[in-house]
Length: 588
View 1 (cartoon, rainbow, N blue to C red):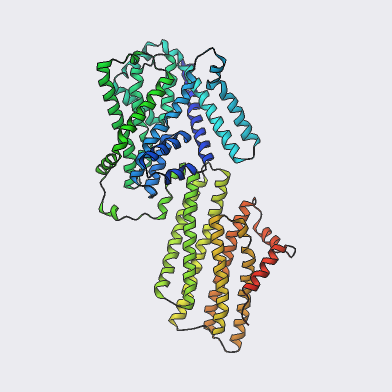
View 2: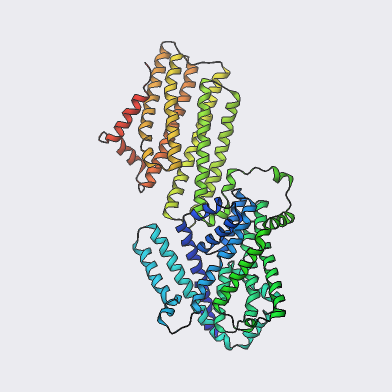
């Protein structure tokens, strides 16, 4: 084996790892966060948790990704540690699917139909289909499928390139001697663990081992302990991901580690004990790609079957390693914990979490505004303080969400997720401003209460009409935002126009009362503060609705849109405007 073979092997390895990553990303986009939601909800039963963990990992082709995701779920409080145990075990089973697919590269036969099963026979066709989908299809789903097909073809081509490059090693005595060292179970386990820890993928390290089998120098006696080590090494990714996380998240990573270590020790102890009496002849035979896939699967099935009944004990072992503190027992997780850094590696799910947190922010902003409006008719100091508290909370939501969304926007996102992020980034500022206006209204009413001022009966009746219109536009805006309802969004602007008219009319009426001596200048300032804040609340509601329409209808200019909908020939807008004018007519 010369330097050119080494370079070819490195190139093959690079293609193999890149193909695996590309295929995983495509599968993640195609799932659109649905698999993660299933994981989150259907984990009450240990057996169903194992099945789900296996299914999700088989689809996204990475036990590390599944485990890191689960660590994030536990860290954010979405999932309990007891629920995570089964998924982790299932993930180990699901990851063996990759080794069976890679085993197809070892098929040797003169039969035309059997040769068609070799990835080198069909992967070029898949690559071509993938290229066609990516270059010529405008549908995002087909482009994701194209990415998966190309990723699979690159992976297989990399596997074949590695296998061809290492073939000359069969005649290298030095290479054979090194592999004989790994027949020692301890050295084999260490080697497998280090290799997998470095490349952070058990599927990839098993694939490398399968590629080495082409030399014929890798015997099952060396391959067996290496495979055990590979299962242990894959835990490194989850351990790294839990740095800075909650104690429960760290315990989740420890459960993964303990499961693989205990499973490996039990499997090797049982196997080598039986070997003393049975003398397994296959240990001295050259390992095959399918043979390695079989060992990989048998081990993970064995470990799961043996340790699943002891899931509670694994959980207790994690708690013994990281004891529960008194503070932790009392800890209440906030919504911000849903914005976990680990979810950034699964953008579709992270976007969904951001939506959930943003909707909670919108509801809090609405609650604060409604509470501030209630103070106008009946002032309550405790409610006034609550309005101020809600404003602080909404500010925190905007800071946390804004920072997280900026990080998320730099990831590889689907078109739908990019659109959702744009809506969220534009809208959270408007909801934060709603809460600012809530405080302004509360302070104006607070001033009235301190100075024992009161609006006239006529002013109160007029203000009630204004309040009803504001409550409706805020309620509709939150629903529009929560459901991304474009049809409802089109009803916001006509109502906003009516609110502008009400504000102008109230100012005129106030000036008349002021001239007649029916109202004081000081009370007029308070009324102006309240109505101006109401009008600005409506403006922000309009911004939220227009943003949704703007992004969904391929980014028209906001001012152009508003001019268009308000033109006289726009009968739909005119009808809705007249309907709202009638509904919110000020009393004479």
